[in-house]
Length: 298
Image 1 (tube, helix red, strand yellow):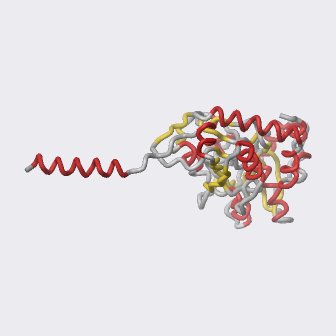
Image 2 (cartoon, rainbow, N blue to C red):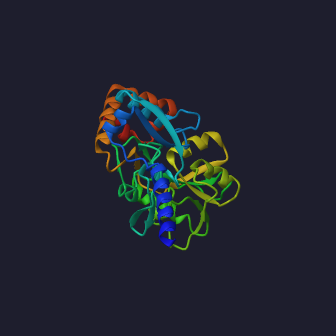
Image 3 (tube, one colour):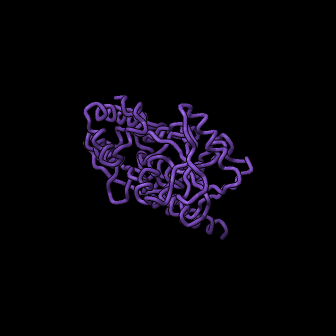
């Protein structure tokens, strides 16, 4: 009787396993061309991915998909899940190490969403050639008693002067993003760090600042430029927190051919003016902040 019950249970288990769908595998260039679809993982953030089906990164990846002769599909995600959606693994930072755990459905073939190149991210993905420059700034409400730093030709000195203003002030930050305080030596310094945890949408940082969630906030240049227009007269830039950074598309480390094809496409549109037209459309005036980056024709 016991043997019979075990046999029935085993038979049921085999049926369930046969009916279950395997998790999608990572795809390189030949797989995407064969499938006829490129899945773009995008986060609704600034003018990179607007949430209305357009944006700077959207147009770039749409063009890339067209150059491959495949269909373009935009897959929305967020900063908490974007690596999991690309790799099928959850990325957990433990000190200087990044551990990939679990098994999850793979929902996209590349990330392109104003995604900053950070050392810990580079341990689990391969980045393309740089797409866009950025930097992290300290932002305050317009009525704050803090005055913007005078500024100099020495960026490191400007960063130190800006950080010196944090003493005794509360600072709004967002972990797992480019606004993570640990990236800029702000953790374990006795600072009043206020983690924004309602969601991982960087677009919410200025509304939270205006709502008095903290006295100051970190914000990257791309978002700050848009927010300075949206919230005219309500916020101000105090000074830089980081050195100049770069944003890029991110690929699984098992997709070198797809990454190489994208780099070649990016070099082509930077050379023929297509890239400049897209940048001007979504970030007019940005070249004045980063002239050296835009002078390069990669």
